[in-house]
Length: 268
Image (tube, rainbow, N blue to C red; front, top):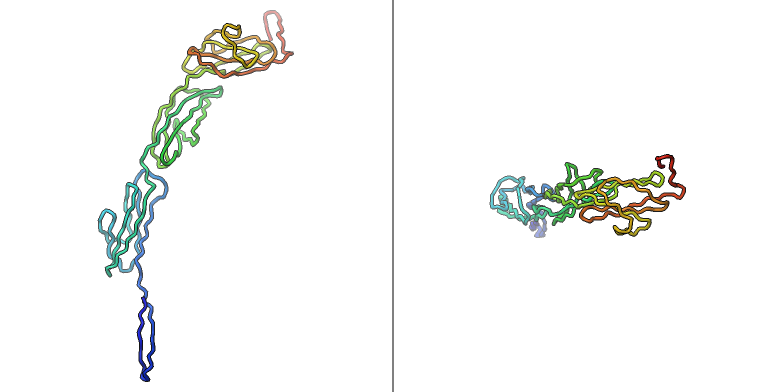
């Protein structure tokens, strides 16, 4: 504030003087121990700058005489701090906390297979977002996990951004598919892979239209490997399991010069 005063000299002349007097205002600094998402307690760090500091009133009503203090909180909300100095002045500061989350994520997963191995597809939701997935001790950020081995069960742990977790068990999609197809001359070897259900038979066609079982293009067998003689051109192959699930087709092409040669009982 300013102090204005006047002086009158011996000649009756008035001299006015102004004196600036500065009063230190109370400063309250409120900061969080972290601004990242968390599911555990936070600390509000309080620092008060006031040469006449007397005491601080915490949001829970507790009075302390320390000008530097850390206050533990466990829920989101608005927190108010009041400080008083020895001259009777009051200062109030508030801080809003919004980064505490205790809601667990939700999700489901499916184990499926192809010729390269198994893959796990995860569907997960959370109010603040998904951080990662854990399978077999490893962490993944993609919701599709590709594996080089064939598995028939899996457990996934979903983590949200506050490290809340949810463990889910994957369902297994029954599957049958062509794992490998190769040729030796006009003899093609088909290897199939079964998951959960047994193999029932194979379909063969020179077009991408799968034949019916009575057309001559079907072999009924439960073997996982079959050898079949085919004519030159492109052959389409499907495999079927015992519950009627049919794989996607896989193809192999035989050149016109790869004719069947017989020498005794041996074939090339």
